[in-house]
Image 1 (cartoon, rainbow, N blue to C red):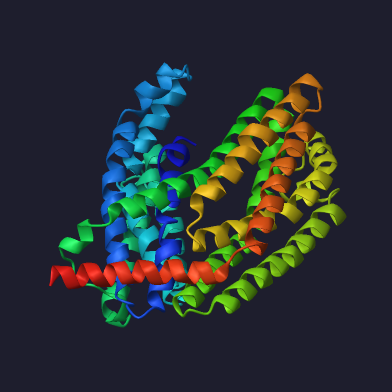
Image 2 (cartoon, one colour):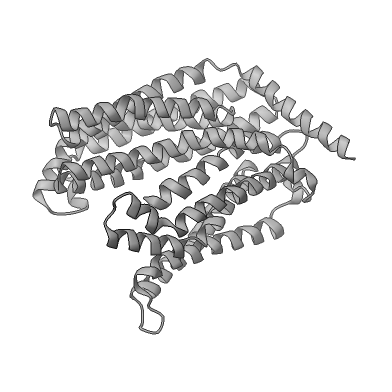
Length: 408
């Protein structure tokens, strides 16, 4: 949780700025801007990682100051120290993934993951439980993760240099260190949009742990389940963001609007499928994870709420992707912050503890959060002036062209 809150979610948020600038640059008259903006994000990430590493290397002292159990604080601190070599690689991987995706090379990151995933599983087995000479126990897990993240970076670099056309690349120069403010502005909005959602789930998990062990176990089942089903609309949101950006770069405003509306319709269909699945199999679902009858009953009674939650979760994911394509990360952040922290979570906690609704109360609050974000996000998408969005892209490209001419 500490790694997610203080590091990984923030890097995810910052690199979401590339969802705005890379796809439109690729289909513009200056596709080499894809490489330039990727380099600039690399600079931003490198600076951002410094305070994160300081937190990770002092995590034990920080957690103790937050009144955590001393043994837990010590183990968490050790874990984060050994995981720290993964942080620069994680940031690089987020940038390289968007570098490939903006060019329509969606399968490249997937192929790389297919290669590294089994290696990661083998490393975890060998370093945590393997033969005595190489078994490291507890620290083997973060070391395996660090090696795997760096291996992804190495393969991505090799693939990008030797197997992808150099159309999108820009030679490293002084321009790499210019216009960083625009990325920081978009990135901070992306942190608010992405990290606020990650943190909300951690807060709900913490609240569930205060209800009862059964509620915590049930929440674990529900969290894993909803996280798994979220991958489909999230992938659709990534594709939507790239597709809209490409169309804006091609000056095809009307087609961009059609793509956004089509994505919303597809997200709704996907969400209905997941919703029906949870509702129909609510009495059997928990037994996929455990055979505790009390947990199973708790999960079964909560799944109808999770089924309703699915309908709006998929829609909110896609609208967030559309907002990223438009460079409206700050608007997305305001929607999430308001939906989760002003409305949904406080209401859910009140229902859970004041009205004794327990886990049901927390999920009612989460569902209200998603209804708020989905409804207002959809309204913003449907009211978009796509001609204005094209004009914004053209202005950004023109500014870069002028900067290049001035440098010459």
